[in-house]
Length: 86
Ligand SMILES: [Zn+2]
View (tube, rainbow, N blue to C red):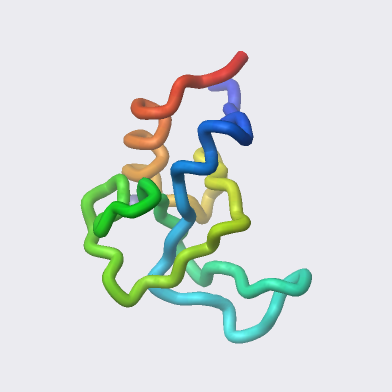
Protein backbone atom coordinates (compact mmCIF):
# COMPACT_ATOMS: atom_id res chain seq x y z
CA UNK A 1 0.00 0.00 0.00
CA UNK A 2 1.23 3.43 -0.92
CA UNK A 3 1.63 5.73 2.06
CA UNK A 4 -0.52 8.80 1.82
CA UNK A 5 -0.10 12.29 3.14
CA UNK A 6 -3.10 14.51 3.69
CA UNK A 7 -2.83 17.90 2.05
CA UNK A 8 -2.35 20.90 4.31
CA UNK A 9 -5.83 22.24 3.59
CA UNK A 10 -7.83 19.27 4.84
CA UNK A 11 -5.36 18.57 7.62
CA UNK A 12 -6.39 21.69 9.51
CA UNK A 13 -9.67 20.21 10.67
CA UNK A 14 -7.85 17.36 12.42
CA UNK A 15 -5.82 17.52 15.58
CA UNK A 16 -3.28 14.98 16.76
CA UNK A 17 -4.05 14.06 20.34
CA UNK A 18 -2.52 11.74 22.94
CA UNK A 19 -3.08 10.95 26.62
CA UNK A 20 0.55 11.77 27.43
CA UNK A 21 3.26 14.07 26.16
CA UNK A 22 7.02 13.84 26.22
CA UNK A 23 8.53 15.16 29.45
CA UNK A 24 11.12 17.05 27.43
CA UNK A 25 10.89 19.41 24.51
CA UNK A 26 11.75 17.88 21.17
CA UNK A 27 12.74 20.36 18.49
CA UNK A 28 11.32 23.25 20.49
CA UNK A 29 7.95 21.64 21.11
CA UNK A 30 6.41 18.97 23.24
CA UNK A 31 5.65 15.80 21.34
CA UNK A 32 3.12 13.07 22.05
CA UNK A 33 4.28 10.13 24.08
CA UNK A 34 3.08 6.73 22.96
CA UNK A 35 0.20 6.16 20.61
CA UNK A 36 -0.98 9.16 18.64
CA UNK A 37 -4.66 9.47 17.98
CA UNK A 38 -6.47 12.03 15.90
CA UNK A 39 -9.71 13.91 16.45
CA UNK A 40 -11.71 16.33 14.44
CA UNK A 41 -11.32 19.92 15.58
CA UNK A 42 -13.91 20.49 18.28
CA UNK A 43 -14.77 16.81 18.78
CA UNK A 44 -14.68 15.32 22.27
CA UNK A 45 -13.61 11.90 21.07
CA UNK A 46 -10.86 10.54 18.88
CA UNK A 47 -11.58 9.14 15.43
CA UNK A 48 -11.43 5.68 17.06
CA UNK A 49 -14.00 6.70 19.69
CA UNK A 50 -11.93 7.39 22.82
CA UNK A 51 -12.86 10.35 25.03
CA UNK A 52 -10.15 13.01 24.87
CA UNK A 53 -11.02 14.92 28.03
CA UNK A 54 -7.70 15.81 29.71
CA UNK A 55 -5.72 14.63 26.70
CA UNK A 56 -3.07 16.79 25.10
CA UNK A 57 -3.57 18.34 21.68
CA UNK A 58 -0.72 18.79 19.24
CA UNK A 59 -1.92 21.48 16.90
CA UNK A 60 1.22 21.76 14.81
CA UNK A 61 1.64 18.05 14.18
CA UNK A 62 0.25 16.44 11.07
CA UNK A 63 -1.26 13.00 11.55
CA UNK A 64 0.84 10.42 9.71
CA UNK A 65 -1.47 7.48 9.15
CA UNK A 66 1.25 4.97 8.34
CA UNK A 67 3.49 5.90 11.28
CA UNK A 68 3.97 3.03 13.73
CA UNK A 69 3.08 5.34 16.61
CA UNK A 70 -0.26 6.22 15.09
CA UNK A 71 -3.40 4.46 16.29
CA UNK A 72 -4.46 2.04 13.50
CA UNK A 73 -8.17 2.56 14.18
CA UNK A 74 -7.72 6.32 13.98
CA UNK A 75 -5.72 5.95 10.78
CA UNK A 76 -8.54 3.97 9.21
CA UNK A 77 -11.24 6.42 10.23
CA UNK A 78 -9.04 9.30 9.14
CA UNK A 79 -8.41 7.77 5.73
CA UNK A 80 -12.12 7.10 5.25
CA UNK A 81 -13.14 10.65 6.05
CA UNK A 82 -10.33 12.46 4.31
CA UNK A 83 -10.06 12.46 0.54
CA UNK A 84 -6.68 11.10 -0.48
CA UNK A 85 -4.70 13.26 -2.84
CA UNK A 86 -2.65 11.50 -5.48
ZN1 LIG B 1 -7.18 6.16 18.02
